[in-house]
Amino acid sequence: MLTRYRLPLYVAGAATARAGDEMSGPALLLVGVAATDSASAGSALLSGITISAAVGGPVFGAMLDRAAAPGRLLAGALVAYSAALMVILLILGRLPLPFVIATAMLGGLLGPALAGGWTSQLPRVVEPDGLSRATALDAMTYNFASLAGPALAGVVAVLAGAESGVVAAVALIALALPVAWTLPADPAASSRRRRTSVVGDLVSGFLAIVRARFLARATVTSVISYIGVGVLVTCSPLLGEEALGTANAGTFFLAALAVASLAANVLVARRPGVLLPDTTVLGSTLVLAVAFLLAATVSPVPLFVAMALAGAAAGPQLTALFAVRHREAPERLRGQIFTTGASLKITGYAIGAGIGGPIATWSLSGALVVAAGFEVLAAASYAAVTAVGRGREARTPDGAGTRA
Image (cartoon, rainbow, N blue to C red; front, side, top):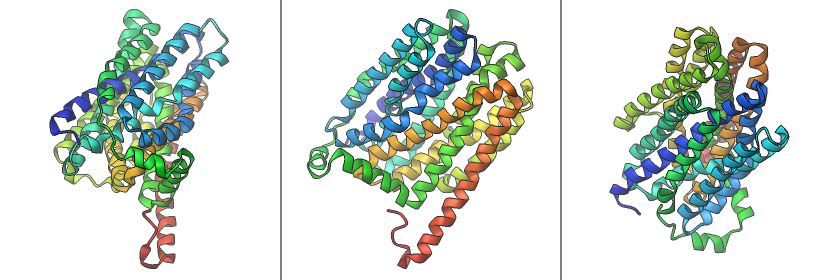
């Protein structure tokens, strides 16, 4: 167990890596649009690097749980992800687009390392009584990354061109390598490797998510909610062009969303006891639905208000999701559950990004209405999983088996 003074180092490393990750998405979207002059091609490139996370996340998480030095494995994943970004940049416009998208999909296999891979290590960084506050701080690194990443992508694209945004994203990820390398060791990993296989761990991890009602409910709800977020992000260049006169300015709408997310999580970090994780997961989807409908007006002032409202919901939603995972995940499967959850969310985002471009080409407002519809569907799924869980609980003596 690391002493308390290491928590700031963890936060700095996670924030830097995630800022690079959050920057890489908009940067790839912008460079794809610039290279092909097509919003659909840009969204396909973004979708490619995100959708393969569904496969990579669970496998990487299982390997992370079995690694005696998980930080070194995480550092290797950061190097490989950065290399994939550079290869995409080098071949875009020189090879047919399907080859570029295939390269993006290969890199995307390691995307969850920048998300759940870090968070799964948090219980080794802090003592149990500090985990709630540390979880809020960890969620704030996502909010900071969501703020800094898109804003930097837009600024760098305006000042130096879209390609420079991808290079800057790689540089940020590289800065996090020393922190990842020095994350604490897992002394119990060797015994777990002797008892179980990777395939067995994969099966156990998926079963743990499905059987734990609260974990399954939070996972399903957040994944569907993130489809709507993916639609919004893909619409951002067109929103910038329509409302502010330039596609690059669309990243500033995403930055406004991230500012509100960060502010909301600052309040949660200062008073971690007031957060009701399960209720927050549900309520946030309804607020996001309202925000996306407001954004469908495609007017500058309502758009910024909508982004602030969306951020006030998305920030606490992420903190609540982490709290549910930490509460429900078995220790030996923690890494896999976090990376699998991240993979599923990234896949939801990729689906949204993939459908958002074509719909926005047809109707920008229509795409945002569709995004709001996914938030309503997420709330409905929360209610559905709750009903199923209660029915199973009623059939099981003393409610046994509903949490594991």
